[in-house]
Image (cartoon, rainbow, N blue to C red; front, side, top):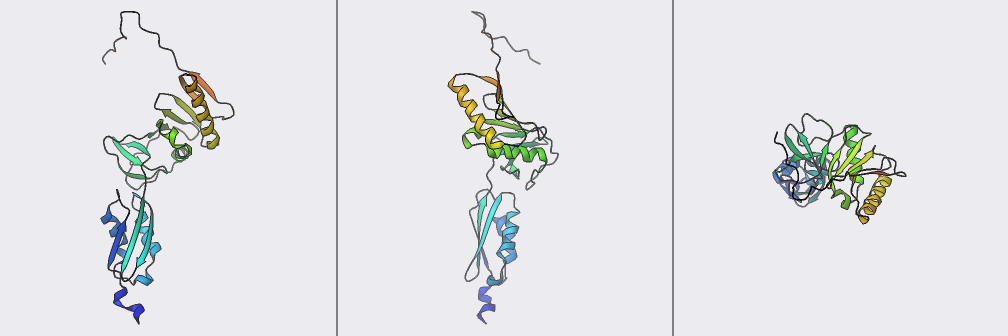
Length: 231
């Protein structure tokens, strides 16, 4: 019968969509299909094997006669940095550790917690990190671009440090839509007024609070700023 013909045996794997993920690693994961009858192949099993790779967010697998398996890969997008043992790691927005960070990578730092051994493929799953990541994902793109660090010493004390030095007290990962909306409104008002603040508190979004940044007194005429004492 044609159904059992060697002509239908899988003899080729085509990988599409990889940029960071190793094409050879994807091919190796899909190699379980080699020699199998194409029509009997479980594309779901191949998909699951490929999605175990750190860089792979999603995989779609299909068949192409006579004996080709195609794997379409959607990769994870690095969103944050994490530190572990002196090494910087790339994280996606859901806390998956994808790879060591290249030296000059500029992404917000996820901080305030200790993870002894980060490695490729690990997913951060403690309550404090999952809460911090939820808060991060709730921010609009424009606001994310202003964040220098997301700090979560506990799940109730999530804090954003903005690039301009402003500290944003976020509290727990609750009412995130309201907090994000209020934070944008407060920032817009402060900037329209030309004001700089030390912190913005949106832990209770219906009652946001701000604290003015300390004013630095100008140096006396003819004198520059005080020198820093070397330590």
